[in-house]
Image 1 (spheres, rainbow, N blue to C red):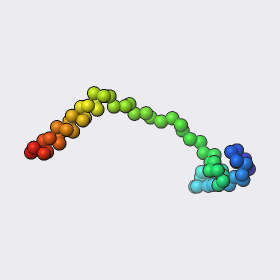
Image 2: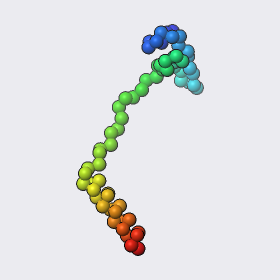
Image 3: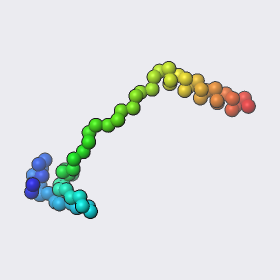
Image 4: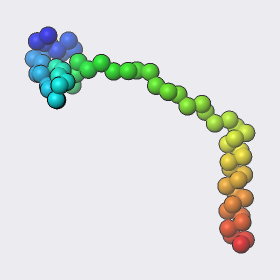
Length: 66
């Protein structure tokens, strides 16, 4: 691969240790495999959010009333 598949500019070879890849300095293309899946955290339930809010308010009240 001598030309960038995005913009047809010349590619340059980049090497780091035993790993090497090609990249385009013009458009930023890099021939690096990536993982597009991620671990998605479950959103907080409304009940948990309210409980967290009420707990926080109770601690603040205790701190101010001593």
